[in-house]
Length: 517
Image (cartoon, rainbow, N blue to C red):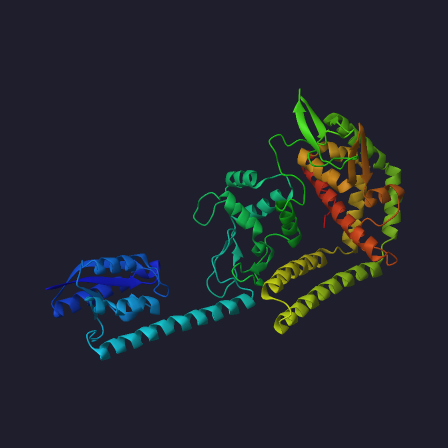
């Protein structure tokens, strides 16, 4: 009786849990019984045959060539190979004295006609896979253009079946938001953030704590802003799933990751770390703990600025804040002046300005697509441009959506004036990392020259003390473009200060004094 190997295969683990492998094995045993063959070993594989390199298949071929069996029985040709490279190996086995049998086909590999028929069936199997691959790609592209993500949902989202958008996971989505917000403060490294999120209970798809690499993957994923990006091709699509974070927060996180937004947390995490520079040589003032006091030192050995104690810096900050804190009577006059200066037409102009910027960005993307078609622009450059412009458009749409109406501007103006009345109290009640954020938003130039501290306020703080400018809303139409941009930046800083005021109110048990846009 001739000895043979039996080879059975399914494409996926899921298929392997069914009856397909058993049916193949029964068919091979029936064939062997009818043809007086003895199956001495079974080789079972759960791998696709579309690509070469299957480990079990290769192991079986090695043993056949060593003479451990004189024949091979397979269920069907497409079970042995769906690519012509592997089939060429199988089809050459008869030339090496190894018989090949197909359990479901009456093919004689010792004849020209039998081998020709087998080769034709192998070509058909290979073409089937090639066509299936193309059709699958078309289906995936179609889903992506609809704004659907046809792959495994990222951590924080859950799958809902084919043709349906991913939805936020009730347990993990809030933790993903917290992760971005924590890193956006600039007070965490990837390592400290990973530890913090694991303590808060964030787990990956396997139910295990997220790794540091997993944290970085999440922070790099635009999916959480509502944008689908395919890493392999570089293509981006506007998703229809619910975003977990804003484009502006995502952009801030990327700035921090690339080192454009100051230092991360350190072992000591000193109060003014990363905030002050030497006014003579522009070197950073680095903190050092010596004899229970923190000193900030210029790193240039030949610089006249040497060290300054943290308590001296803190006294200078308090002195500067006292200078710009307003009295109650000043607040009443400021509120009247600012509220009377609001202009519905100016507010409409700002909305139109943002809409024009969105339109301009969309036209730039369209022109880039035209250049790609003409061959002037290469595909890699186009995809990089598309990713950048898509994120910019998302950021502008966020600005447009968050643009406050006049009632919101009024509420924010009143709350902002309350903040100006209590700058010192606000500062003293904040935690160290919140104090750093406060100072970053209040003073644009923070320098130390010798033993002297220089704190130059942003224009919004200076305008508040002098009673000029409008605290929230659109700039006046007589300002040029540069002033408008600076004004909009000032609005962002004021809103961040209002958020700090909310933190202070919560920590002291006070109710919020108004809405923050």
